[in-house]
Amino acid sequence: MGFSDKEIPILVAEGILKPLGRPARNGPKYFVTAELEELRRDRKGLVKAPDAIVGYWLNRNSRKNSTSNEANRAEIISAE
Image (cartoon, rainbow, N blue to C red; front, side, top):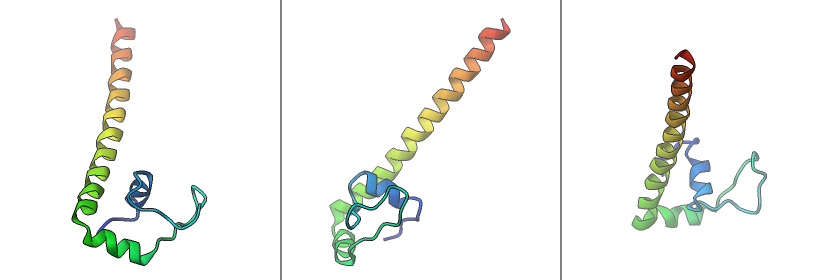
């Protein structure tokens, strides 16, 4: 479907992809080929996937930036 291996856990967490059974969090995940084909043909489903990936990275980067901004402010305050 054009997604990297690193993006699959994001899609699973968002409920867009559903692995078989209840695999361990860090274990291998298996998917039903028919469901993957169905998702690939479903335009609405395909729109959700990139949105979920972009949203994940926006959230993660904003948290990282806010943490570094707080550290910078603390350094400025302690230097005064």
